[in-house]
Image (tube, rainbow, N blue to C red; front, top):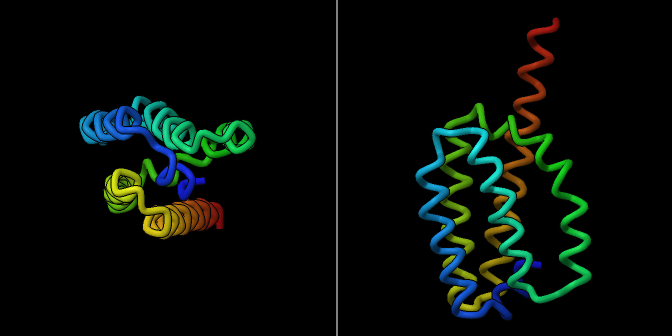
Amino acid sequence: GVGMAAQNASAAEIELLQDMLIIEKSLLEDQIKRTRHNLKFHDAIHRCAHNRYLNSTLQSLQSPMLLLDPATAIDPTRLKAAYAEHVQLVEAIARHDPVAAQEVITRHLVGGQRARINYLLKDSDDVI
């Protein structure tokens, strides 16, 4: 997905992603607005791929992702890392570098998964 975005993104789309990063930086302290913006940002990346099938598939993943967001919201370290990964992703797309874009998104997803696992483990500790 992001590899195709890096190959196909237009100058206007890259500019939009860069603008969205500025907005994201201003929303780091606001969990609700940031979560909404994060969905818009991921949607904008998918649109850059110019692939209708990919876009519809990724849209079906959006709602489960939204439900899992509290993991990132409560971990300020993960929040900063996720923002830095968004910056690196947009830089890779701007360079039209699909390999770098794929590498960043892989790190991004693994980091998000780790944060969610830690979040769930913290919850289970409270119950015991």
